[in-house]
Image (cartoon, rainbow, N blue to C red; front, side, top):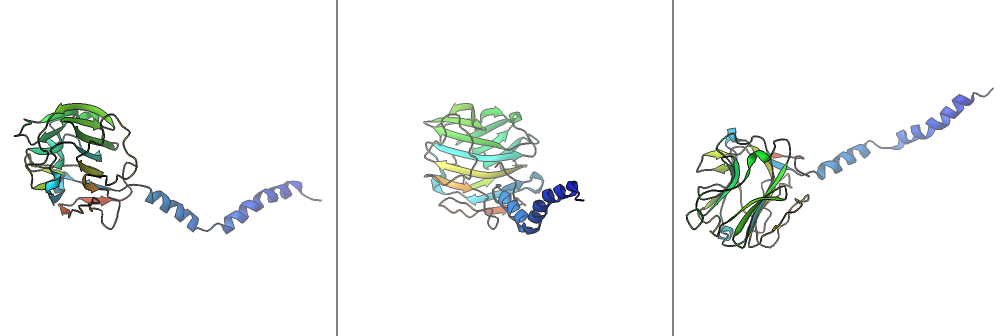
Length: 249
């Protein structure tokens, strides 16, 4: 007598077993690779090891009018020291978290005096990536956090005019260093890329006209490469570390 229960069970299992025999293991491997290559990389800066990137400033970096600085950043500590330096690195020209605020100095002696503070650094968290941008348009400097304007000030001085060397992750004036991951950093002269609230870019930035510096961290064989047309030679000091598959998108 035919056991219909066993017969039906065999009919159900047969296509499943056949599929298991013909699907190659490489199928899973290819899927993993696809996910990996779709993830951005970053550079880790550790204050304890005095990590920084350094390069000689070109004259084209001096911004007499409109400019845009932007980067994705994930802070590991917030306000552990007086300053968490990001870009610039001198006393009179920098972009940084300073004394509890996201702040800048733009050629402080002519004609902008003192620090220009925009938003509290406590608005950021160490558990997520944030997009920050500083943009000058027609003499007005605006700061954006995750695409939302968080403050503005008038300042018409020449940005970066006082520097001969650009530092990322260090400020010589306050002898301070950054504890954070950074990726997709861009500095553009001559264009205010953002003039109102925006959705932070979730793809690699490009070298639009006026781009003086572009740190994408997208090439594992050359993670510290400037992808602007300037192709600037960047020096590593301390131990800034390439971190694959760790980024905002």
